[in-house]
Image 1 (tube, rainbow, N blue to C red):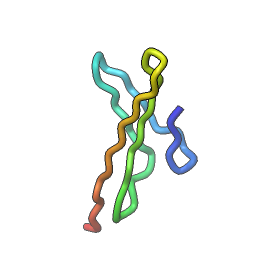
Image 2 (cartoon, rainbow, N blue to C red):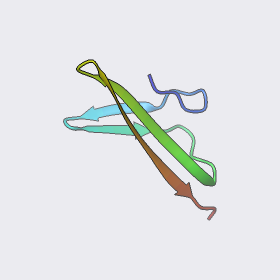
Image 3 (cartoon, rainbow, N blue to C red):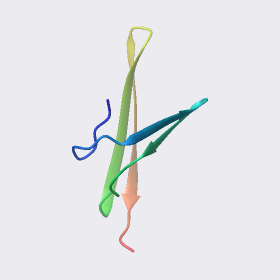
Length: 55
């Protein structure tokens, strides 16, 4: 289960795509999304960082 700032985001699966809609925006500076899953007995991990500028 994914939790961001104490809230569960809205997840949607579309064939080979996972769509994640967050309830709140990231604050200016940096945001990070990490994902881990068990695949045939081995853990796989993916993480990406975003730079959020102030508009």
